Length: 401
Image 1 (cartoon, rainbow, N blue to C red):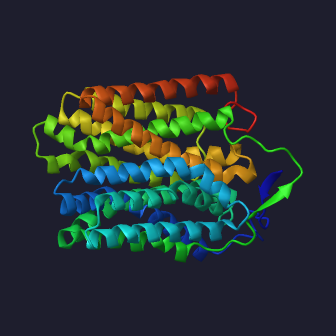
Image 2 (tube, rainbow, N blue to C red; image 1 turned 180 degrees about the horizontal axis):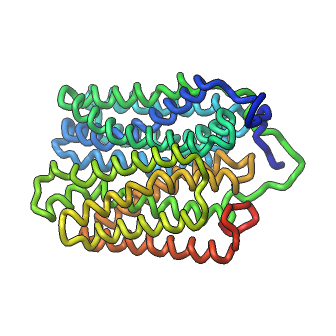
Image 3 (cartoon, one colour; image 1 turned 45 degrees about the horizontal axis):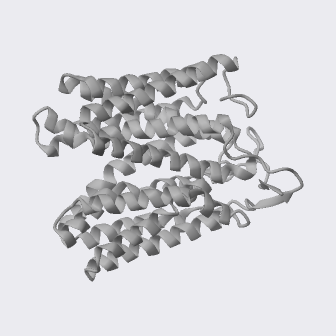
């Protein structure tokens, strides 16, 4: 039987039935802290591997295990929680992740075999996609539809702040002890279990209708776009050290590429929040083209300036595109499938990171950036043609976009 999310009606305007601002702030805090383990993990886990193995590359193995487990667990784990309130399921998932990360800290403290740390990292990552899948639909019950773009813009901005500050904090604590760095990301990553507001009856109910597919062509298209965007951003962030070396700088000056990208992304998030409007399809095609141009500048840039300019272009459209992806999937997804679709959105981004990592590992920096650029150009062209074929500026579930 089909299922549908049930919640109290919400109206815009005067006399609206809109939850208090405090609960929305709690959702923002939950969204920002949910990403802390993923943001701080690469630094913290590398420091852990260095302390146990004398080689920081073991941290990459832990991150790979976490990411692959996220991809594998996104849909099965999301479906397990369909019978319970979304906030309750989210708390349980965050609690499970917290225990797994605490296991990493304990194993590090007692110098357990490194394989146990990889297992704990995989267990922690297995619920990441499902947790986001249950977090995102809760926002629909906390803000009116007219303010949803603004709320998502704020969330995107806070997410970028998390990815800027969390690695710095992990690095600072890791100089004292790698265990402290892992404990910090464990505690901060547990906050959503305490902060997420209960929004009433949001569990699924049986309905005598047919099940709708979670992967319609239109949903699959935007998931592909999300994966391509994730790969483009990851190619800069992961390849930042190699880019610094390419131009004759010390590895520490990789921040010449990552910081402008993050600052530009924060700027894009602020712009989305101020504009508070869902972008038109033409605007989205233009944003995809801008990201492709940015990737091309990074791939073929003959100077530091052009490469940094490419990173800035990528960052500027990152938040607007991410906001559009979640808005359009909110429209296209069957109500009872929204947690699964949003889990897939987070998983698509993870697949993009895996793709970029694999290409950077298997090929030279220039070749890898060229492949990522080609992927981004292909996606932009496909969305452009689909937009022309649809003949409409705003998405509907029956249209290709």
